[in-house]
Image (cartoon, rainbow, N blue to C red; front, side, top):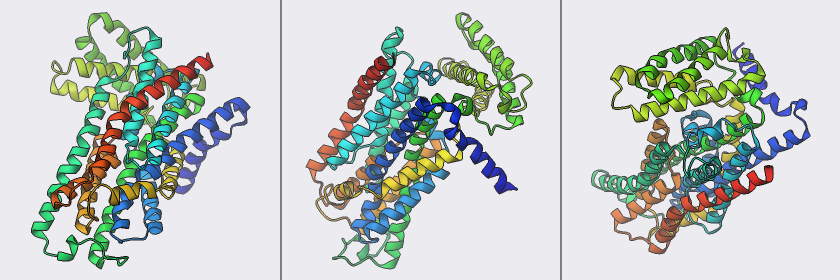
Length: 480
């Protein structure tokens, strides 16, 4: 019975892609958009995941083919098991007016602009064998679209962009490589002081694999980094695919059809919980609008046992209301945080969680599609980045201890970022970890490579912002 229910749930979500009522034009737009989104994850696979296999390949712990196949499988699992917190942390960087108009031509122009600009930069840095960050790339593209959209809105450049979230994400991307460098250096130093095993601190000799216990350790750390990469980077693709589905098929994907009756009641209760907060804390000039939005939300849900009971023509409007109310509560939390009591802050967080549960979701088939694209990409084109990480960061060959220290720090850092719903760069954390172990070991660094990685790190955000802004402007003009 459980299996049948799971299959029915999968079929109900998946079948909409092949709905003959869509029309040829809409179907082509949908297929092309999904292909580009999954293409981004495919490129991400061979661009970023090469970092996870570099150490096991260069320490002869596993042959290249077996290493990338295993890493690809672990990336697949990481995406499928990793949840969606990071996915919608990325999506929340977009201006609210774009999120509530994703079903329009400008919404699809937004998605295509940010995807194509991110793919272009990833492919360019891959061709130059520079480990660059797909996270930086995508976030820069999102901010570029947001800035371009604000120019069209007439509300001032930068209005509508979630700068608080952008700062939070930016700090995580800035700090994580520093953490990777310092902690990997400290961990290697600690290992050298506590583990008396001379063979651990030697580079591989010829093609001979390391002793079994070292090999097992390095396979374990490679597995951890691959799982962590899938759970963090794969979620970015999930968020983008959902934007496309919501834009093209709002009647089917605007709301989570799996929300249970109790959760519908929870959403209704959430509107009542925050009404008192709005009356107490929201300035009078905005209060009437916020209360009207809450009332409209309750009216739309009145008498509905499940979200599937909402008429198809009304689902997009309900989604837009949920997003607007959540954004208003986010603003309340930001601007009135000092005045909120502990109980009120907890009530506000609980209410936002209830409101978001209906709109921030992903069906199983989306997880599988993104996981497959990322996992398959891992097995293609990995060699360029592997050579850079394994040979061109330090002046000497990676030792077993250096590889293990860099990967332990990388998988831990990414795992903690997953827990906090923040995107981090696998590339930068692991590359900086390798550099940290080289510095701690006195091996020396190849500064030409470090300089190139640093230049790419600095340029990624502004270049992707500019490229996505130009593409968004062009696509929006073509669609008008």
